[in-house]
Image (cartoon, rainbow, N blue to C red):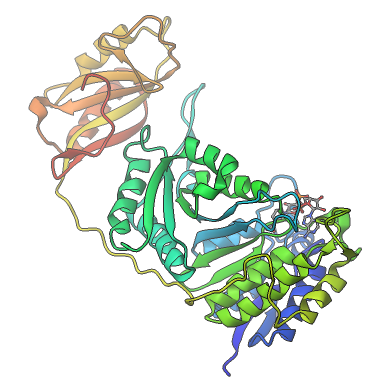
Length: 480
Ligand code: NAI
């Protein structure tokens, strides 16, 4: 049998204990794995490596396709980077996958009917980390949503549903407000959904979707969403599942993928043989399925379910009355090993099909792109902040190429025909359209900016206005 070589980091706090328990179970179940151990996290931070990942670890991380990671303590304070974020971004781990399932009544705090998977886009959106302070009063962050990034995560969600026998994929966005950014995500979802006719699909606005996840999780099966919403949804799901100590997660990339527990390093119980290894074991099971070793993952997870069902519980899930035996981390692992080959009688057994999901992304078919104007953002703080005075000054500088269409403040139209009640900051978006609804070029914009600068106006940023195949590639202002 060919063995898979994987990278392992034991992690900090309870990491070494739960990793040992997990490796013991993997070994007893006959998982065909060889390990390369690396050290990342706290010890490295102490040596002054602010990323928590030494140079020597990267070669190992890149040469093996899977990384099983114990939880890492992230030092508080400036300068330290989270190991998770560093690895996720560096290795292009685009999909964060977090299944949450109820083990009620054996795990008492779990919502009786939750059984869903959150598939979160992991690299884009507001997490691209592009932020600017532009005026005394205004800071901005760029929300970047790309077509290939969206296509990859949405395809992953459908492929996951297919591989794991899931029935429905629900997309959650806020495209009633962000028609272009979230609209792209929703549109790509609709395009891809038709390629999976056997899987039901629907879309929910994120606010009601999150509320449904909290109150009626049985409505949901696979949920796919943008990075920020997915981050929040994953935590709601873990909470509703009542089992932060039980959930695992996968960070999937096209070459390398990382598997771990959802929880942190739990320094309060470290070194006391109290930790529940189930979250990391779930991560390890996801890794086995990813490696095409679904049968071994099934063997392990069914023995684990039987252990829960038999009431053999670590302290975090032990409840007088429903639990039978309170055990430590080592004894819990042994209880699972003793039950390998058995299946639960009341909880549903698991069955995993499929292997590692590889997603290829199509190149976007180019559309005709025409420059039709520019939004110039101004830092302008004249006494009274009168939009009509600004409108007059800008119209005088528009020149022969442009006409001033509108001015907005925080997205609200204040010129022409603004309302005196609208609160204005020092940050103004001024929309110039090429005259006669025509098209233009960058030189004309440079000319406009020079005229504005010469008249003492402070342009802090511009956004070109493009039409793609004749459709505006920008949000329209009121009355446009
Ligand atoms: P935590 O998840 O480590 O602990 C929260 C609570 O849950 C604690 O009371 C802990 O004892 C308990 N708990 C967690 N896992 C458990 C388990 N397996 N068995 C039994 N009880 C368990 O969260 P906290 O305290 O906010 O973070 C501690 C450290 O972990 C921080 O440095 C944080 O940055 C880091 N962290 C790392 C993560 C990772 O590496 N993926 C994820 C989350 C936090």
